[in-house]
Length: 530
Image 1 (cartoon, helix red, strand yellow):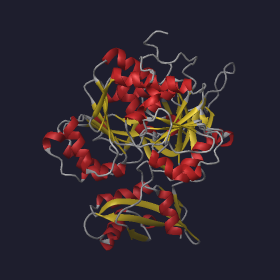
Image 2 (cartoon, helix red, strand yellow):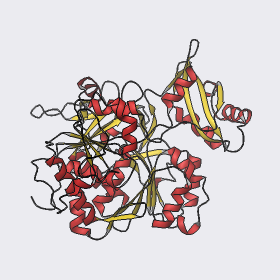
Image 3 (cartoon, helix red, strand yellow):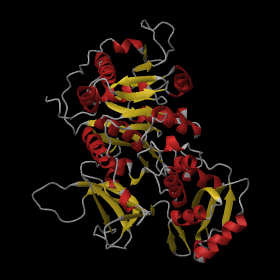
Image 4 (tube, one colour):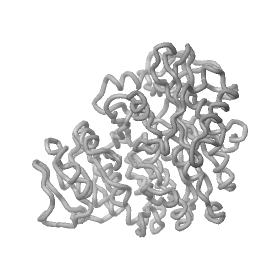
């Protein structure tokens, strides 16, 4: 195979080793791996999986905080022709056990303390054959914990082959590469199956419009189990950039790492950016940032304005993505002043349609469902043909009769376009508030709360009501000591029609977030109902 042909996710690192060699690829704490070193470790891990008897498409899960071993596991798994399952380190043991059982994971990479929490929950998992502990160096397995039916391994022995040669595995880029589990708004987590092609094309597309290259140092602030977090790795390695791993605990750590490593790019979700915008940034550190990007929800305009003032040299990228298509849209920074509320247009090598329930195209100004077509459309939901059939459907419109139907992903998100084709997010279908016969986007209400300067965080929810259908509740955290609810409601009455004014404002010192860092609307709704 020619070295420039990328048919496996790990080939991003193989290419990096060939082109960038000794250049820094990955940093965790005080350890930095060059592209050559990281590729050698990936090859060693891949060879170890083959030695353990793993076959093409077998699943390998990694349940760890962000560290070098986590990245080696993800890319080494795909180099062995297996499927990587990154598990969010913030999940509870029963949630982790569900994921491991749902996709029949054969190998789990974790640490001793995490395994001790999991042990009782995975005792009956018959698919799990091997557990590799990254904090154990034992070569003879003496003293390692025991789980019935699973063989235990220390981390050191997996590097018996660091030759820089990956196993020769027959594969094409349409093979499975990863399963990313999304919590969803209802029911059990869904495993979104991504092919090598999905992830390689996504890396090429995103790194192209962000202008990533060897000149960049990217801060990895999002979970690697989250599509946008994993995309930080793939875009960095595709472009020869240096990525710095961060396990987000304190917002002040962002400044510390940006100063230490001269970070040039950061991608985050709105709750992350709200915290970052409140920090006291040294001018010389802020000046290093070349771009900042938002995904996972609409960034409040007040936060965007503060970030632009803090990072005057940085290009702001407002992005939209769904795990089922990895990435979908971005707003060109040149358009930010004209339409700061827009999620932009399709990323390179993707097309975004806005359709009515019957599949016909919406006109500009008409609300419809966002549909994504192209090589980033995922393969479906793991072992779930019913939900796959609901979300992954033939592309609307009558194509030529000689070809098989093209499958697109129907996002479930309501959007609208302007006359120039720029997209605007309205809301998720399952989050839209239905009150007094009106359908209301929560973001419209939340924007008013942020614009007052009284609320640090804000989440609008619809709670069932016999008379109204749903009544509007706003959960907000104060900007200072306490929330001035009266002033907040006065602002709503001035700026919104009466049917959009919250019936109640509930103050919370801190609004809970889900493991991906987004506001946890499901948990909030359950708390309010009870």
